[in-house]
Length: 425
Image (tube, rainbow, N blue to C red; front, side, top):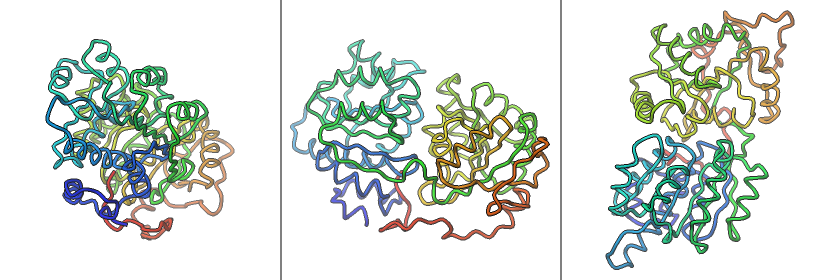
C-alpha cells in the first residue's frame, strides 16, 4: 500500500514525498482511515512503529479541510496533543512541521524547564495545533493564556509513560477542561489496568488498533548479552566502544548521577559523549541531542525518561549499561535502534544483581538473548551462567560484529504490503 491509496490530499502527499516517505507502516495504514473518519481510536503500539505520523497526517488533513471551509478569523486551538516529555513534544512538533509544510496550518509546542514568556507571546498570535506536556499546559491554562473550548481532536500520546512518570492526575485534570464532544486518539505502548480504565472513560466507541505487541522486539535488532561485574562495567563499555562499527550509541543508565558519571568516564577515554536526563536544563538537553543527531558526539548517555522521545535516524547501537527491572522497558530501549526498517544492534551488560531481570526479559520476549562469553571482563562468579547452546557465542563482540555476514532477511516478519521505501516515523 502507498500513501496515495489512503485518500490523502495533495499538500500532504507533496510533503511526504519531500521527506522521502513512500509507504505507510502497519499502524499508519490502519489508523489514518479511522482518524479521517473522525472516529475515536485506541492504539497499542510500541516505539518505532511510526505512530506519530499515524495521528499527525490525518489531523493535518482534517484541519486543512476545516480551514478551507471557514471564513478567516481568529485562530483557536483545534487540536491538543498531550505527551509526557519535552523531547517527545519537540519530536512531535517536528513531524507536524514536516507533514504540514504546505497546509498553512500553525502548530506550537510548549513544555516546562524554560521561560514561558516566548510561549505565551506565540499563543497570543493564535495556533491551530498545540503540543504540550501536562504541567506547562495546566500552568498556562490557569493563567488564562490557553483556551481549550474549541478543541476538535485530543491526542493522548504515550499514556503508559504518563502513568510511570506520575502525570496521570494532571492528564485527568486536562481532560475535564476539554469539550465533551470531540475526537479522542489514545496511544499507549502497554495497557496496564489503570491505563485501560482511563481509555474506557474518555473514548466513545473507539476503533482499536494493535501493532507489534510489546513483548516482541524490533525485528531487525540483533541482541547480545554480556555477563560482567558491576565494578567492571565502565571498562567493558570502553572496550566495546573501541569497535569502529559502533558509529553511534545510545547508552542507558538507571540514574541521572550514573548517566553523568558514565559520560565523564567516556570523555576521559577520548570517546565523545554527553549525558541527558531530567536534571539537565532544556537547552543543555537539546544541545546534546542536536550534537548526537549531527554526529558531533558518538555516544549519548540517558535515563529512560529522558530517552523516551529520542528519535535518531540510523542509530547503530543501543547499550543497556544497566538492565531495566521492568521487562517492557527493555523492549522500549532497544526499539530506539532498528527503526523505519533499518538494522540495529542492542548490547546489554548484566551483573550478578541483574540476572533476575534478564530472566524476566527473556520470558517476556519469548527468546534467549545470545551471550558474548569471550570478552575481557567476564563475571567473577564461581558458578558462571551457562547460556543456551543455540545462542552461545565464542567470539568477542568486535570480532563477531566485524566477521559476521549479515543476512538482510534474518528475522524479517512477513507483513502484507511491507514498505519498500523510507517510512514516516
